[in-house]
Image 1 (cartoon, rainbow over the protein chains, first blue to last red):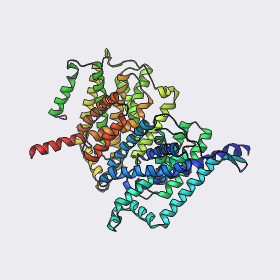
Image 2 (spheres, one colour):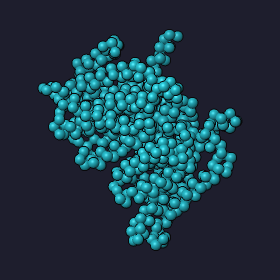
Image 3 (cartoon, rainbow over the protein chains, first blue to last red):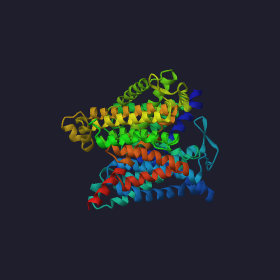
Image 4 (spheres, each protein chain N blue to C red):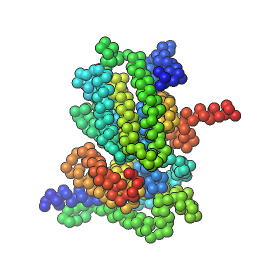
Length: 292
Length: 305
């Protein structure tokens, strides 16, 4: 019982906190997958830019809360410009080109960040400290806030996708952009706005996680591999699947690290994905034929 | 010799004469080694990417496994090149066939990441330092690969054999089916071809050739490190294919050589060379989807007009 309270429960909560932020990242990735037909390799770099943009804004405004609003907007703008200048011309081409293009973008963003902010590790101080007694243990307030904020955003996104016309339009674009074009919707604008929003979400996740992780130019590379696994596990192109899979992977990673060293955890997570794909090649909630 | 054609033979003859060029230093010979090795691996990858339409982000794993196979054998006193290459081929084909239908860019990427993690943290294989200080390899009793010139000829021989194999594969019925799969997988399936088996075959040939390339690398550098398996290395193979020209054999060789020389020259001038390389990649995707080989067509069209 003591073990459950002092070790297992905090670790489980850590997992949930991480999973909620991972869900934000994976959701953007899966929507972009639906639009482009490829994984966005630069998504991890938008996540990283979110953290650095946050540091830059905090340096000027001295407020974490201002940064939390401003950083996603800044990164969203970067994403919109990127989409208009590089991705738009190649939508009609094979997905292979999109994959390679985003790989090139990732290289440029990562090295750009290293040139601007240097390669060393940085920290962001949490906006508030202290901890709350919870179920017989004490848990840091910031992590609770992180869990609440991420869950709230995920819920808001769910409302957006199911209850608003704009959300339905984005979902339609994910399903069949050509048809949507035929129905008279300005698909190019939808693509640009969606790409910007997905970048802003990644940036938000980056800044929210920054106080509990460290910030460095390669931080996106490690997260993006996990996010790829999440999207594959949830089923390519399924938004709900990504969120569910993010919680599975986040909690699994957190619990495994109690009993294994980090590299075994990475291999175990990979093992989960392989087992799921053998049993169910389309992932948990994937549409038939996307991956098979 | 008819598999190669006279133009290829001429190019190989010129390449063979490269060490005789006056003023050829050790540095340039080893750079030429890297360029040709990278070109040969890019060509092997293009068999999968350009001909079959499967993008592998995990070829660095095959490359690194080949390198480790050599290093492990050499460390234990086996110095014959042929034993190293055979062992590498065995290891790599085992990994290549273990992943059947779910062959996909991301799966190969994550697979490579797991292989990287394994070697990075396994102290038996030297951890992050890898296996260092390997002795010179022996091709035949008495013929030791110890000078830059001999190393250069070793890689040239590898390139020649790999190119001949790729030519045969591409021209064969098997190669035609691969192109058919790339163009329309469903149609190839309806025509009665066992698509997964063809894909697996392509993957195996490509991985084997890459693994053999990896097996040669420690004979030049005398080490094998986990960094050879990093996913950025796989990315560099893909970049080489794109620079040269997707779906050709000669293109990736040129692309690999161009990329190696570009990286070497740019990184000695500025330390932000990744921006240059990323930028080159973006420009090629946007404006030159056929790569450097595409330029040839533009020029020939202009000459005709």
